[in-house]
Amino acid sequence: MENEDRRTLRLEIPGCAFTKLVADPTWTITNWSGGWSILPGSVLLFWTGTIDLSGYAREMKTFYPSAAFTQKGPITTESGNGGTLLYTIVSTTPLDPLEVVTNLTGAGGQGFISFSTASGNQDWDTVLFAETDVLVTNSNITPNPDGVLQTLSSEQSGSLSPTATDTLYVMKLYLPLVSNQTTIMIPPSRVIIPGKFGTEPDVEYMMRLKRSTELSQQV
Image (cartoon, rainbow, N blue to C red; front, side):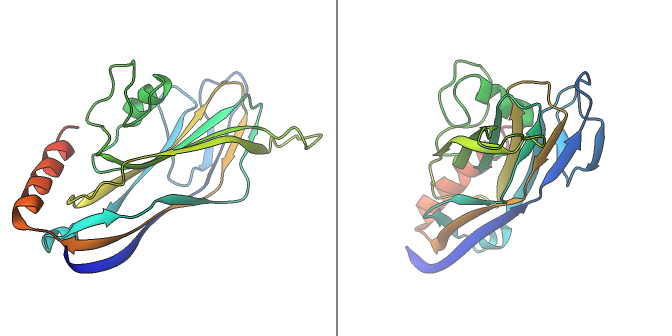
């Protein structure tokens, strides 16, 4: 690989806060949405963003990730909580929130074999990085009227595969395991991907670019 150019990719994800009554099927007070969206007819929330690599793509450079991780704000709260899943994913192909939810609840997740039929255009190579946090009410705080949560488990996956795509797609998803909550507050976070850009031989680059373009069009 020639002309190595080390870079750290970063994307800031805003926090949010939503409120509703217990009987409401979806969030009704959304003043502090922070750019998050509600999956219609539900209490599921998602945020989407992109990391622009078009300048490097124009120079015919390939990105080689060396690691990936998230940094998170200090506290997540949810009143009426019975368990919550927060999922962050970085993909080389566009992401559909309903497909992501279906794959997560299909006991697989993006990039894994799932018994659902919604795997879509995702596989091992397209999912560069994903993180799943399962949160539950912190029982060490009594009383806990705000529903301060603690992490029960945190799992990471992803291929960290080299890519010639011009865009990385990022999604963060809030998936509650029950629906009797009245408030949710998710802190800001950021995705960090150290790596390097380099120029590879023409044949290898063109094959990688062809594959990236084909997958990005399978929305």
